[in-house]
Image (cartoon, rainbow, N blue to C red):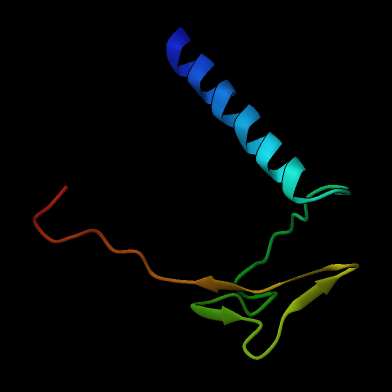
Length: 73
C-alpha cells in the first residue's frame, strides 16, 4: 500500500510540474455541478452550440452513456 501511495504522489507532482510549466499564471480550477432537471442536464454536448464562459475560462462538455460490454468484465 505504501508503494501505491508513493507512486500516486510522484505522479501528482509530475502532473503539477507539467501544468506549471505550460501555464505561467494559473489561479485555480473551475468546479461546478449541474442537475438533470434544473439545468437541463442530459446526454449530448453542453451547451449545444457554444461554450460556457467564466472570467477568462471557456469550455464545453459532453455527457455520454457508458454501458458495460455484454458478456465481458
